[in-house]
Structures are given as C-alpha cells and as structure tokens.
Image (cartoon, rainbow, N blue to C red; front, side):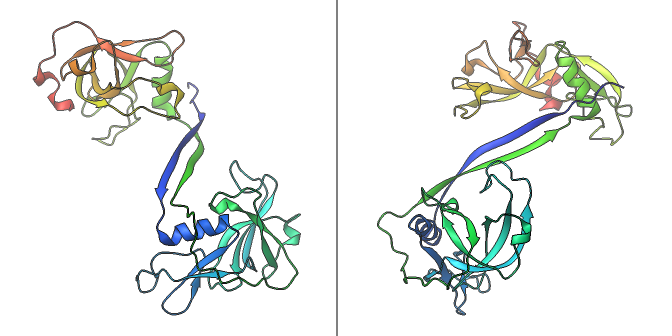
Length: 316
C-alpha cells in the first residue's frame, strides 16, 4: 500500500477589530496599570468587563477600578508552553478573582512548579515592561503574601484611549490527506492529474475524496484526467494577498473553476497568459508547470475554440 502523506500545516492571519467604550477603557487601563471592571444593575463587578449584562442583557457602562491583587479560584499546570503563550517556561493557568471583583480573570501564573500552586493562594499582577493596551500588558500573576492592594477609584477616562486591536490568530496542526488525496498529490509530482470513479454513478471526482459525495460509496478506481480543461466559472481578484509568500501576485488576476477533460467535478486554479478581462466561461485552458513544482502554477489558454455551454453546464 502506498505511503499516506502527512505534513505540518499552519493557518495564520491577523484579526483586526474595533473596541467599544467598555473594552477600550479596560485595555487602555491595562496600559496604564489600572484594572477596570463594569458594575451590573444588581451590584456585581465583572472583570474582565462586558458590554451587556449577562442576566438582563441591558447595556452597562458603569466602570469601576479593582485591585491588582486577588485569589486563585482554580488552576492547571502547563508543562509545555506553546508559541505565543504568556511565558516560555512551564507555568500555571489560573482563574483569579481580583479584590473587588465578583468574577474571575484567566491568565498565567509564574511559579517554580505545580507544588507551589494551590486554590486559595494570593497573587498579584506582574506588569509587562512595555505596555500597549492589550491583555498581554499583564505579563502574568505572581505569588503574593502582602495586604490587598487598594484601588485609586479611577473613572475609566483616558486622554489617549485604545480604539482597536490586531489579534493574530494561528492554528498549528498535522494534516494527512488520506489514501485518495495522497495518490492525487503523488500523481501531481509527476505532472499528472488523477481522480477516482464512483462504482455506482460512474462520476469521476477530482480531487478524489475516497468516497462518492452523491452515492456515499467508497471509490478506488483511479482515472487520469486532463491535462486540458474548460473554465466553468471565475472571479476577478482585486485585493492583493498579504503575509503569503507564494501568493505574491499582482492584482487584478483571475481564479476559476476548471472542469478537466474526463472529470465530473471542477477544481479551482489561477488563470494566466491572458488579460483578466478576457477570461470567460467556456475558455479552454491547460496547466503551466514550473521547474520542481508539485502542482501547476496556473492554467493558460490553449487556443482551441471555446467549449459549448451544454458540455459543462452540469459542472457550474
């Protein structure tokens, strides 16, 4: 049986969001070493603050300062910190009820080991040396055996409030394409495109999925398709991709669904070798390979007459 492929995969993008008055005050306060909560209509103080009362759903904006000291209510030890986590050495994840708050805040606890952590222990905030108005302005919590700190009664008004944040989102995982797609990828390395035929409906799926999505039966019969095909639908891309080295393509350009000859499912690929405004449904195209590439760089016109709509209408 051929080897099933697997590879590490990273999905990463920056998530930009604006801040309302409550979150703006909370994050700006952290920048100024002030912890703000919000008071609900029934008198509870929520930290971190929310914009709507979780019980009544009413909008709440009554900000109140709480202390940078508090009590651990529960915890878990992190033996192997991951990229981007608060501390690079083993640490505790803790829920801390800050003095003056009625809810808990999740953050890291810097401690020498799990034996040094317990529910009920007193802690205080260790502030980051450089603060920008984000949750990471709290570097971590640390054990504390002094008296509870007294807040100054800050109102939540700041001269230069933080109005937006950029939060990087990242997912690291190992991807295994399975038997069918492993065969598909291996064939691409030989500049061939293969699909699998359903034994019931006889449709050929590219890329293969290992099962027919219509009939629900397993597929195993390999069928080589293409290399030429027909553009069924397409879109013009006008926004340049960023943070992606292999998509450094000048806009505008075209991405299209292409029905390869012999396939019953269209795949998508970039169209090149033709002005973007001359790409059309029915355009006949062929793959363009670059040296050492594992898949076609793009598809270009073959020069053949356009395909008749009736030949590809079922693949739109």
